[in-house]
Length: 107
Image (cartoon, rainbow, N blue to C red):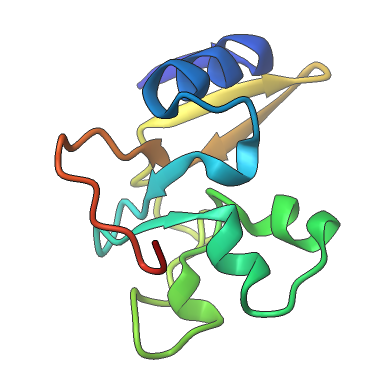
């Protein structure tokens, strides 16, 4: 299990993707391995607050049926590998997409 503070997690995302915006971080669903980012959820019409509540917690397939799966980390099975400490609470999150080949849903 990888554990980060929110600051460490943001820094890791910035190092991997060269951007400071969480919506540009690419995360991968632990169930179906689909890479996804906040901007993919935004493109489905979600406002930023809703995007941030689902990003890295629910697979995009819950909202866009032709891609991904309907996995969410809020269920009974704990298959996640990353946790973030936010304001004294632990939040489960999808891991960063770490492939050299960046295949995005909507480039």
